[in-house]
Length: 353
Image (cartoon, rainbow, N blue to C red; front, top):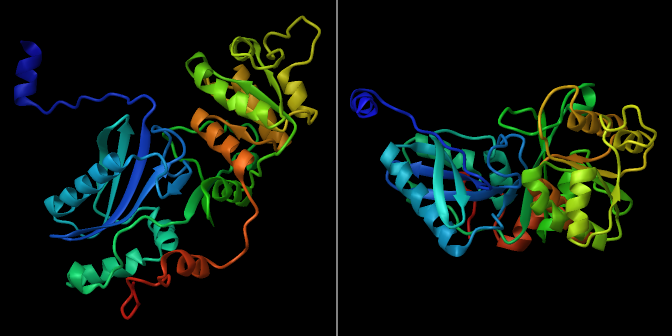
């Protein structure tokens, strides 16, 4: 009864965390009556990682046609309902086939330059014309359609420049820049983006795993894929046992705290000696004395790629397995080849197909 009385007289915010959600970013234009969907992008890392630190893929590879259609319909309703004239950014989460709206921003977002370059539609120029009083029909924008090539926006992270910084990704934005890569297929685009961001993925060697209990089942297919590519696997006790039960050959290695008073090589020793080329470590806790922190710190010092989310690890494995060489060409040439439109659609006088 007391809760009901409080709710009747005050606003109450009820919050909950969506486990294993896919986060979606949509950049759109609105003239207050009509909404144009500029780009529907998917974050590589799961919802909960700040959008500025998460890699972003266009077009969104995991959406079913039904979910993609629901997302566009939601955005089309939000623009006019909020009276937006110009740019509109909507962040959503998808769990299974259910779509949740996280936030709506009646402004430009950091993904607008990426979306404009990937699609060839100058969203900023179009938004300025809308703000000046033109209507959507007057802009001559190309039909809404996902691009046929894949583009990836990856964050440039500063951890290697700050000794002692913990490279765990979370709700606090820590990136200092971004890079973009485009290719005919997603694994190649991912590999190019990671290389441009200074995190070139290895193609052979020894991969180390230490993941929290909640991630052990999801880490098994990642480890199996790496083993299938010829990587040797090492892992701490709990993770190694999970892999062994799944039939994956793995070498067990000591954590730093387990080695106290014992003889044996720890995972930090392996990383420092250059005997690991990839580290996958999902955090169990925080603080400078935890094993996870020491592992991630050693990886940063040794300049070894360190991945702290399972979704990021899965994307990396797909890139390692399937990335191909691609011909070098300008962004304008690639857009023209795949869409038939120049990269200035939306500008005054710009052509559109």
